[in-house]
Structures are given as C-alpha cells and as structure tokens.
Image 1: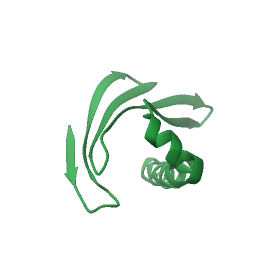
Image 2: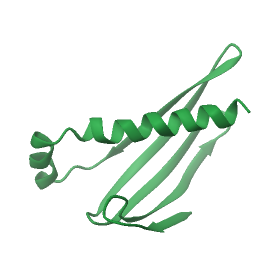
Image 3: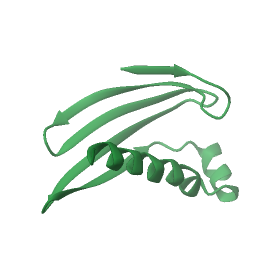
Length: 97
C-alpha cells in the first residue's frame, strides 16, 4: 500500500495492490480521500507482442451525480489521460533500461 497527502492538485489518498496475475495483469484499489472522496479500480493488463509488451492502463469507478455535472464542463479524460500517457512513457523508459 502507498499513501500520500499532497497539495490540492494531488490530494490525499492511497493505492493498494488488490490482485495480481503474473505476468499478465495487476489490479489496484485507488482511494482518493481529499479534496473529493472516490474509490476506483485501476488495472494494468500486459500482453506480449513479439519482442515487446503492450501495456493497457485503465481506471474505473462510480461517478456521483455532482461529478457528472462537472464532467459536462471539464474534460476529465483529457486531464487524466495526460497523466496516464506520462506514466506509461515512464514505465516504458524504465522497462527498456
């Protein structure tokens, strides 16, 4: 389990490994505690492709009604997607060392 308490951009939360199916899948539980509470499931799926591995990073969770209204005005996928892309690029760089 990993816990953090950062500024308003990072918030407060914890991340824990919920399940692992080596070498193809890792499931994590992501609990955001502040500024807004949320519980999400994060899944990394690894699929061998010749000399490389295709990694898919997905996150799913319940979206409360108020958040659905916010999503009308903010593109949350675009905001979070940039972090997912950066995270996958970092993972690729580490794996290729």
